[in-house]
Length: 519
Image (cartoon, rainbow, N blue to C red; front, top):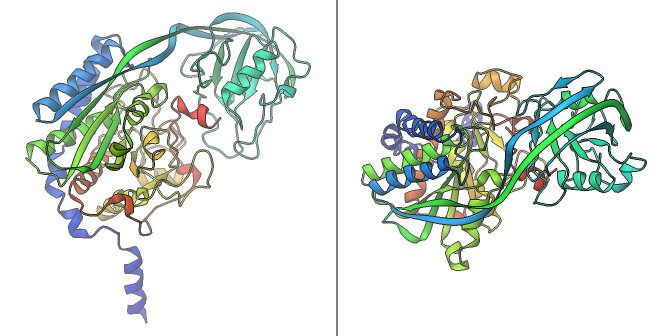
């Protein structure tokens, strides 16, 4: 009986991919080196250094990054296309200001204590701060309705600054309600759910579109918002604040880079994607120089080994991801139904070198998270892609954790068209748990990437161990998908092997789309 139990346990624990499948990628993985990935990241850092400190879409830094990728992929023998598109640029023309002017003058730090909301209006105002329907602390995540209804502003004094809390409705709805009630600016702080280690993350979000509100709108940490409310849940806080935003909004040109293998079945295309742009505040060497460099190293190695793929590989570097997945969205929108049908799978690599990393795998079947705005099962085949990554890590004796299949990176537009997707992520502004620190090392109670969307996201903002392991996993899956005989779109998954499955394992990734689709 003990022998039978052991056999059954082994059968349950066996990964879906056979061991020999994983061993077949060993030579390829060995050739995809950490040094090669870091070489590309160093090039992106040098570009940022020479062009004002960032690689934001449409900027000289982004153009130089584009040319670097084009030159490398052309030299490797790929068929390279530059896809141009126009997008609405929105950013700080001059640094924003948030100050308490009374009773105790205090100046807060941009990017640490507060952040300008995308599509915020511009103005420089000083006025009384008034709390609007706060719930502190929140017992249940995403339950706060502060500012979501016009009725929340009953008795709100015209000319005041509204202090609201993140919760159930979009930031744009809060800002529009505040403006309609006569607010001259709005401050939105994090929700502060009891027991949530991410309660003090900085709120970074978007109003959804230009013109939703014309008043200045900024987001803050829970700690700052909680201190500003001065114990008040609804009404005057007894504080006077200055909010200054100077926003530049205009239409700009940017680009996607598309590079295809000359060979491979054109009716069985595998898209391998990463966004190339950074935010305005810094060079973005983890977000997402890490993903961009990883797929560039994989593509060059694939060509150098003169591999002849069964399925066509389409490597893609997207522009304007930081403005709401605009590059990948534009690409997908330009495809005909027939062209969409030819894409068998999409794998995405966005932030794969976070210094306080966890090996996160997109939860394609949503088997670990409650269904909601930030988590849902992907199209058929997504669970199969998840298994490829999870089984690879298991074969190497490495733990992995699921992260919600939220659509908040460049795979989002693909899954909306029914294309299966998967990918890797090492964490953004989410807080590492004690259990994760015990499994992966690093520091509990600290963000996975303390420099997320900040100027310090430089070449030094990196875990070489995490990046090496994630690039190996990416190399294995890309090689596997280049020659797999099955149609990914028709595959189901076996039970994946996971080390944990809690919302705390999410990692977070609040790019500009977060508030637009969630809160």
